[in-house]
Length: 288
Image 1 (cartoon, rainbow, N blue to C red):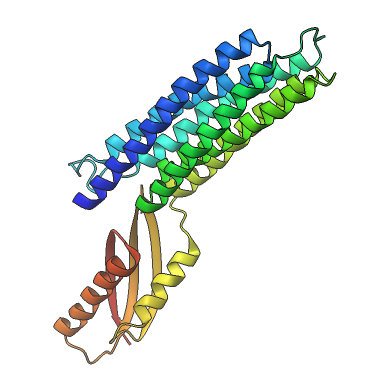
Image 2 (cartoon, rainbow, N blue to C red):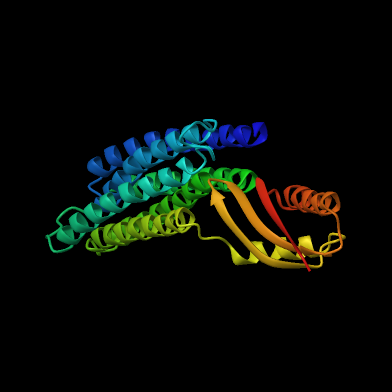
């Protein structure tokens, strides 16, 4: 339990890094976007502004997940992290649709001003920063198996790609294609909505007790190697935040006594926790 809580605290650091980066970069993009007359950079800045709210939601989810089990949460509060990811996806979707709407309206408006090149340099700088934040959060998220932090990392990468697209649009407008900047803003809105959908899809999959079938197969193969296990009748698993809980029915020799059968089930539990990092295992024994 202490190790899992410490992992969540590590995840908080990653989200805080994202929040600080988003605050600085969104302010920079919005200011330069208005000064440099770039619709794409302003759309990118609004995207980062919503990312601040989404990241705060993930941070709250990580903090709530650390609360111990209580009377009406006997399994703990681990799923708060997943709920936070879903809330973040809703926030991103709303802003993505707004950015898309404004950008489409701008496409059909006459553009007399060409975005200044300072907008392109700003977008390039922000893309590099966000890619570095993505690498940090992605590595940390995989290390602690945090769905919330991995969702934040996915958003970080999306933001880096959006900024690259913004730079391309601004540079293109310098060559007599002023419509390319608002077209890029449309693409920014589409990417925001796509990222929101992917985060929502993963979060809803976890909340509806969806689980990776390949992992369950690996669990089964591990259990079958344990001495005394003659077969696996059934295996199910579900997620509680970044934790996996496994229910498994094993077959043992019908002549075994209660103590021997119990020892085998304990070995199954310990092996799954040790080899696969499973948080909790419920083992049912049936004679064969």
